Length: 123
View 1 (cartoon, rainbow, N blue to C red):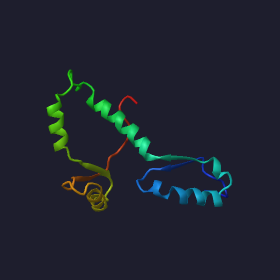
View 2: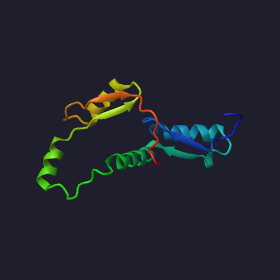
View 3: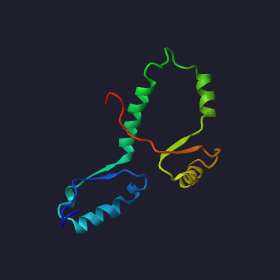
């Protein structure tokens, strides 16, 4: 950034940046005039909103006319296992994290892929 100007917005668009929030804010505050007015955006809510839109678009026309019976839901829930898709090539670290987060489960499949655009048709 030129001079001592502070950014208008800081976006945390990688999973580890929110962990560094305090450090990033302190550094900006110490070295940039006007940093107290900087807005911070974390990917969590942004990605949740994006994926909800994508899911609605992909599931449109596949809605159930009737709710699934309780026995079916119980069976599906018991069998459900996470699958992880990451953008980029950090699979081994992601697998290690998954083993930590889901210690009693079989290791989830991790797919390393360039996910491309986040645009959703019609939005």
